[in-house]
Structures are given as C-alpha cells and as structure tokens.
Length: 163
Image 1: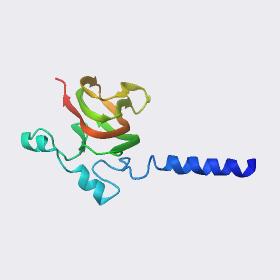
Image 2: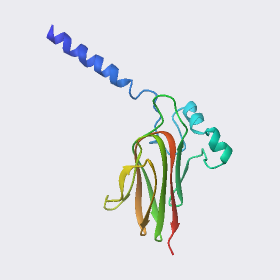
Image 3: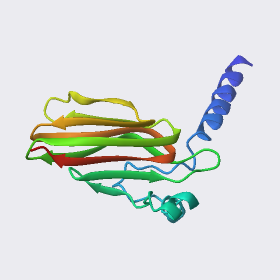
Image 4: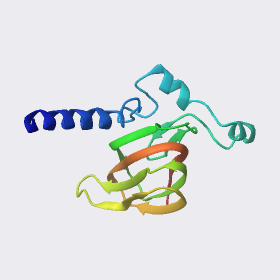
C-alpha cells in the first residue's frame, strides 16, 4: 500500500505545481516578442489613463545603451512578463549615466547591471518597485539582468553620456 501511495502523492504534487506556470508568457526571447499572438496583443495595449495623457508607451524598447523599456498593462489573475534570468548585453564607449525609472504596481521584478568581464554587479540586483535611481558606468561591456514577474507597470533604463 505504501508503494502505491508515494507515486500517487508525487503525481498529485506535480499536477498541482504545473498549474503555477502554465499560460505565463516568457521574455527570455528578444524584448518585444511573445510566444503567442494573444500575449503580443495584450502587451501592446495601454491603460486608458496612459493613452489619454500620452505618458505611457506600450512599445517595448531595447537599444541599450540609449534606452531599455518594458511595459505590461494590468492583468487580472496570474500572468505577466516572466523573466528567468533574462540578460541583455551592451557596450558603452564613453562614461554614461543611466537612470532607472520603475513603476511596478504588481509583480516582483528585479533588475541589475553587471560587468560582463568580472560578473560583478555594479547596480545590485534588486526589486524595482516604484523608484528612480542613477548610476554612472565607465566604458566597457555590461549585462542588464532581469528576474521575476511584471504583472502591471513599467521599467525604463535610459543612458546619457557624461560630459
């Protein structure tokens, strides 16, 4: 009896846990692409107040070191932009000041910037939330790292040369 009970319990646990990830679009693809047309359509809509004010843009931008922008409209229930260690490499040739503007209303998105050579985080991997932060990076090669889920909100990283 014990031999049959253990496989049944394991099977039930696997079935229960599989529901946690089914239907979640991923962005460990290039930014702006989604695994399904429905997810792509959902990620390109704006909330009414953003469309009226013109302050939110629903188009993802990925042209670091100039700008990185990720937007997710509100979702009912589970889902959103899921990042499992998403990494975006970029190179800067002059000292550059980066400004992070986070407006994560729902989700637990973490962002960090690390040196590609040393793998040391120069902007520590941390929860984005609602914040503004800046960091100056010297010329070199870097990785933008994202981990977590963005269910409602946006994050923007912009770079400008320091004179």
